Image (cartoon, rainbow, N blue to C red; front, side, top):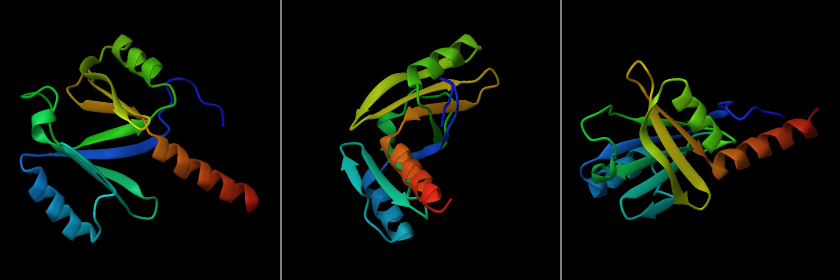
Length: 142
């Protein structure tokens, strides 16, 4: 599959912010019936549903742009994060949270679009892995 540098490939991650990360972790563990698969200081992440979609809970002290746009942050997977981020800014978006290496190949960035909406993009190895497995399965059945 060939994509341009600014193609939004699919939803990669939803992140929520919580004032009490430990309480949020317990609550979502009860909601999903599973422990988070990934945890580090200030962040826990679950993979849920048929596609093992990622839902992250972030300690609110790490929320960028306090007092600005808030709520869930939905991140779109893109193949060229730097190029996509630059293009969004060129098109009139303002930087909300610059490009950040999160570890293990996960890289995020977010902008506020000209209409006040938060738009996040990321390079997400899990999304790539799930998509590749889906495409391989489709090829076998073609």
